[in-house]
Length: 183
Image (cartoon, rainbow, N blue to C red; front, side):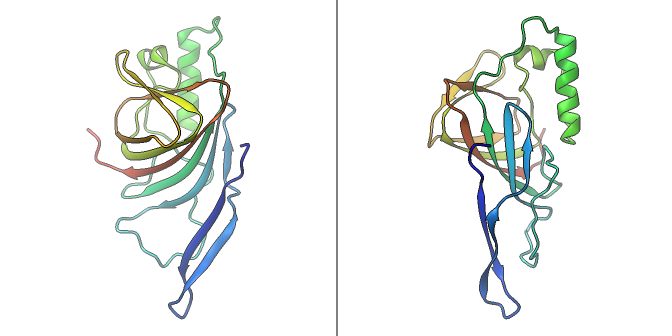
């Protein structure tokens, strides 16, 4: 990741006073080649309990939040990701399946999803995403797509989607994923 992400995590000390529990660059970085993910924090319950004084970032990373949980992460997506023209759909499906399986995702790519785009997938979560830098096109079902720029916010409600970086600059994206009852 070109920018290491600093986390400042607050909480209460033994006297019930506010304090900084963690002030450091997150060491939880997953380098997936074209995409790097920095895990910042997670919860595994709702409502969240504030009695935890240890690092709650989940590493190695998982694709989806725990039941009743949430994930907070930063993603950097590199430009220029192209599928080699000589790769067949079956091989692309195998690669995509292995990737989602490695992230412990319940999502199972299909020939149709990888044909749309290798990143085309679904999460069973409510995702809040903020574009911090770069230009990113969000692919939807059919041929629908939306190009996003810094400051744009996506509220992703458990739908199929994919990502395509536009231009020569990487995209920096802040994301909070919250477990949901997806259809």
